[in-house]
Image (cartoon, rainbow, N blue to C red; front, side, top):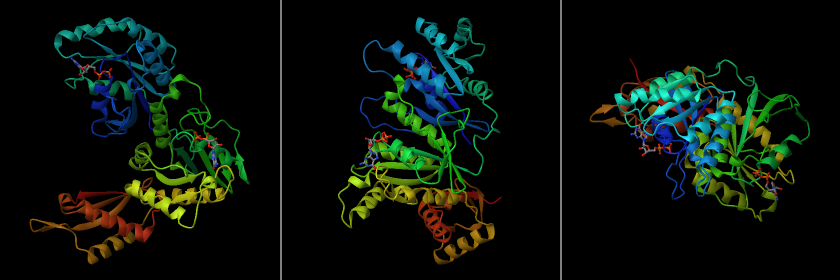
Length: 437
Ligand code: GDP
Ligand code: GDP
């Protein structure tokens, strides 16, 4: 299910990143390592009651240079109009309305998207009346909030989530495997997509994929349906904001959210850097199946150890994703290209795998018999019962006497036993302990 996207737009200093951080709480999505970047997150996940959504702090996307406020704000608005399902237009009760606010409003009128005005810094009763002047911006819904006190945020989210599209309309059928390619610029993502589409027996559908993103590419091979979700303007470049690195990271995040299987693409000639980890880490957090694809293998000077060494490098950098298979290929020469889709099929299947309860419990009982659960102050963890509650990713709940007694290392041990028994190759597993009531 694709999550609705909410974007926060407004001139600098109205409090966008303060509110953004309050909404995502501690669910950190991206952290940039670059020095001098004060706002290090710009894409996160939030929830309100039973509704989940992605949220973009467009203030994180700014043009460098002097007096670029207007250009930045304009770019943010453009981005929000394009990417968001609902736009939060933030203004400041303390300073009152400014020319830049009117400028943003002008741009947002053209968006055929719902806009909710959040008047921030309503820190005291006195300022409650200050929100009225913002009705002149011409948007119907105005909510007073305070980032400092955390007041009004519930009302804001209530107003925002009301505009979400009906969650019923799945973009593609259950039988379609949704694939996203992520990776730094120039690793060969577009070339790889073109190579896949040019393969024998691949039938590319000429139907424009979806209402949401017409640049998705649906295709079929050997009776299996796929869709490639466009990432980071792979086939559509040119907008000003698309040249910013943060934007491409954000676009990748959005593609990951919509995918079942994420191909993390590397250039076999290059090493692995922090940025690769952040994006792949997001695929893991989002519970997606993943494959590491090492491209440009044609130009790598190799002997019989090279592949093993590169795999080891990947394993060292992505300790949290040992489940993801590694595929070596060349988009250019098509060498080993035919091996990719079968691996995609395989991990997609594992991502959706359901283990019958009795079989799962047999494996857990055996694991417990070999290696007793941990104790704390004389009390031992007891696992009464295990059950898989969902797929994509496979999620298992252990009903226990006291969840506090579960240790990370024991959970890891059980995960390894479960993987040894059932595979789950290519997919993260979620395991939760709950008190048996
Ligand atoms: P952004 O540039 O729009 O992302 O704004 P920031 O979130 O960086 O906030 C700008 C300044 O306003 C910071 O100094 C915040 O501490 C402050 N601020 C944010 N929310 C409130 C609020 O509700 N009340 C007051 N008084 N200050 C706030
Ligand atoms: P993207 O930015 O990740 O979409 O990368 P592109 O697909 O635009 O490729 C970047 C460059 O790498 C282009 O010049 C491609 O021709 C080249 N390239 C892509 N795949 C391969 C490959 O497998 N081998 C070699 N030698 N070059 C490749």
